[in-house]
Image 1 (cartoon, rainbow, N blue to C red):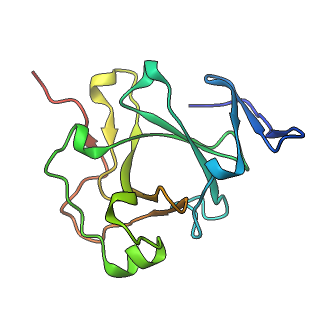
Image 2 (tube, rainbow, N blue to C red):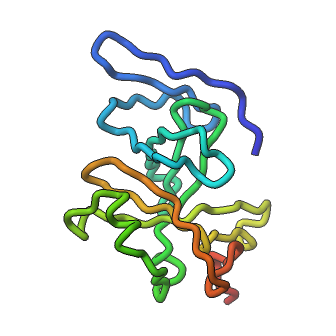
Length: 157
C-alpha cells in the first residue's frame, strides 16, 4: 500500500498532527506515543508510534509511525481470530516492557491485507506487545515454527 508523504505538525498546545492520506488529519499528544526501543523488524530506526482507532475499521487499529508517516501498520488483537493464541512471553520481555501489572500488557499482530479481504493474514510469529501504562512497545520475534507469519484471519465458511 503506497502512501503519500505527510509530516507531523506541532501547535502551541503541544498537540501534534499527522496528515494521513486515508485517515485524514490525526491529532495526538506526546502522551499518546509508544516508544519501541528496538524499533520493529526491518524498521529498527523508527521508534515512535501512535495507535489510531476508527469505528469503521473495527476490530482493526492503525499503528502509525510519527517520524515517517508513510510507515503504518494495520493491527488487530489476535484473540479476535485465533482465541487459542498464547505465545511464550519471557520475563526478560516483560522486564524490557517494564510491566508491573499484567492488565497493562496488550498484544496485537500485524495484518497483511489482500485485495480479497478473505485472504488477508496475520503475522502470529512476531506479535506487537504494548505496555499501555508506560507507553513502551516491543515486537516479539518467536523463534519456533508453532505460529505462522501468514495465518488467515477469516475462516472459510
